[in-house]
Length: 498
Image 1 (cartoon, one colour):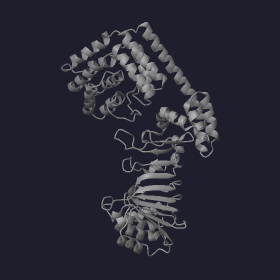
Image 2: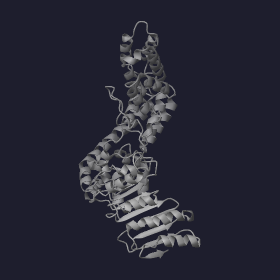
Image 3: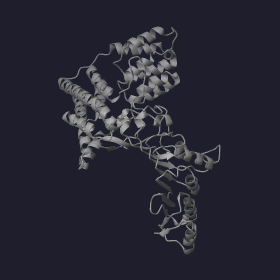
Image 4: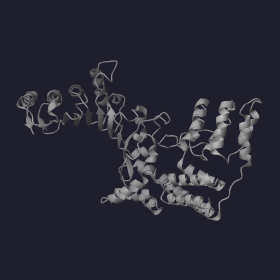
């Protein structure tokens, strides 16, 4: 047994040295299942506390852990046990059934003891499930709350005997001792934990001092480079990352190594709405993010932290994201957003006069499937007029568009302020309108099967100006099809065929 425990502790130390604290906790828990030393439990709790900023508090308040995967992990289960019990004892009983299928874990003990304080767990069926869960998890656990529960039970409660057995098991449990080799390994790991936390406190102090200045002077590298130098002196990899990305001759190979090792921790301040691994960094800070779908267990739209101040681009997921939230979007920390990608057309109606958005990509509405109350054309016209109120908007991209979308946009007041308009239908056609260009309209036919649709596109684009058009065909067309295109461009003063 001693060799097995020591092997797990060696693996924990190796994982901790390479900053894989999830693996560290897994190795510690494996050691705990072999030898339930209180010293092991203490170190497990220290690592768990680092991994879960918001866990179960002493007063029983349960808050969701900042964990992206919401399967039945021990971390989420401990939260679910208490949070669901406060809503319904039936839900809590369901999660107790799930817990019995999981490996024992010391995280479960405090959650189960919190359940023992709820009146619903005096009911025989719920109490039986609670006792089975406590037996499965095993000691050590505090027997005082269980003794208090036993004293509250009715004399004829069928589960009182089960609870008495669990209390006796907790009282009679004798803490096992680690051998000298394992004890030394655990002490070394505990010391390393303390040193890392002290190092992180010093780095956090540097961030607290300089980040407000960085966010207040986003176009000036001076503050971020001073902060980076202090972080480099402390051995914080973020400092090196900032310096590299601010350098005119950046070492991209080293940048990628740092990103691979630390991306998740650098994305974490942005919160749960951001899809992990999709954030783009520039000059050491996040500038482009993709939002992911919410779940019922996540906050809908938590207020954006100051870390969002450097973000310039949001990808809304193209129908797979969380949906638009106007109040959230107008938060002061999002004042620097300049580009919006893959946003649903009907959500653009609620954007509000954001001061900085200059480029907007929308997925065009599907006729008959988006606006059930009024005619789609009326709704689209109103949305384009709403977008005209965005003070900085100069570039609109419309994906999966119909010719009618072009006509409506071209006749709106928005068209008169746009410097560029792009529209397309995937696999069929593309169009770009730039009023100030020498040839304002450029249109490309992608598929010969879309000639009829492309004819309508060319005619609809007349609303953006008829000074000139450049037409490209990626497929060889038949003579009569070319004739149709030439007739469709008759209104343009100048026509180029590319």
